Every structure is written in structure tokens, then in C-alpha cells.
Length: 168
Figure 1 (tube, rainbow, N blue to C red):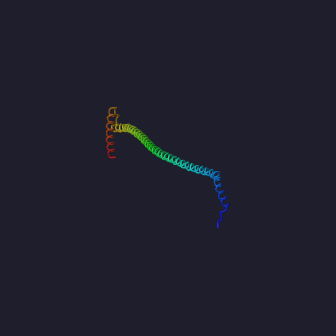
Figure 2: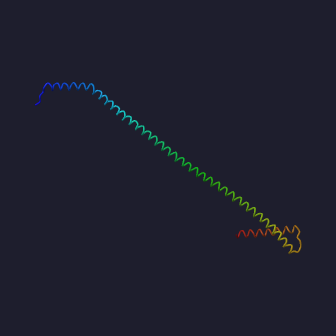
Figure 3: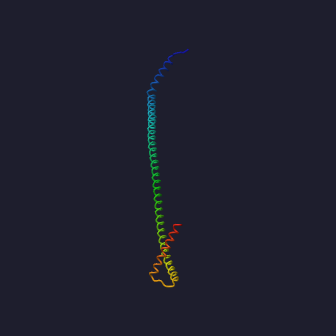
């Protein structure tokens, strides 16, 4: 059986004294250390949450700036395309104007050459008519007769040319 002797009582007393001594010397500093450690861990957790929130806000700002930059890039591209189309239209219009000028100049040149050729033809035809008429009449015509025959011949030639142009 259990024997409760004085040694047992002294051991219990010794244990209680040791408990209070250790409590005063060891438990308070350990408790303070544990509380400080818990506070530091809580501060680290709070700091990490704060950093996470700041990172989220920075990410949101970055995403907004990225969206703005993309929208601005799209606007710039759209404007550049409009300007390119306008420039192309302007170049085409200038080209058309230049072509019209070249065609108008060519038409004027053709008309001038036609008139010059027709005047030369009239002069040669008049000379041939006078020569032929003079041979037929076996005499030299005076200037008034020549002019009258030339005008008559030219009227007939013009009428024939107009008739040929109408048929063509």
C-alpha cells in the first residue's frame, strides 16, 4: 500500500516551492516571450494582409491603365486608318485631276493639229482646184475668180465632210 511518510510530504512541499520558483523565474518570461511571439505573428499576418490589399489595388490600377492604353491604341489606329483613307482619296483625286488635265491638253493639241491639217488641206485643195480650173479653162484666173472658186469648193468639201462624219 501507499505509505505516506514524511518524505512524501517534503517531496510535495518541495514540488510546490519549485513550482512557484519556476513560475516566478521561468513561466513569466516564457509567457511574455510567447505573447510577444504571438503579437509578432499577428503583426506579420496584418502586414501581409495590408500588403496583399496594396498589391490588389496596384493590380487594379495597372489593369485600368492597360485598358486605357488599349483603348487609346485602338483610337490611334482608327484615326491612322481614317487619315490613310483620306490621304489615299486625296491622291486618287489628284491623279484624276492630272489625268483630266493631260486629256484636256491632248484634246486641245489634237484639235489644234486637226485645224492646222485642215487649213493645210484647204490651201492645197484650193491650189489644186485653181490649177485644175485653170487648165480646164485654159486661161489664168484673176484673184476674184480664184477666191470665188475656192470658197465654192470649200463649201462642197465641208458639206461632203459633214455628210461623211454623219455616216461614220
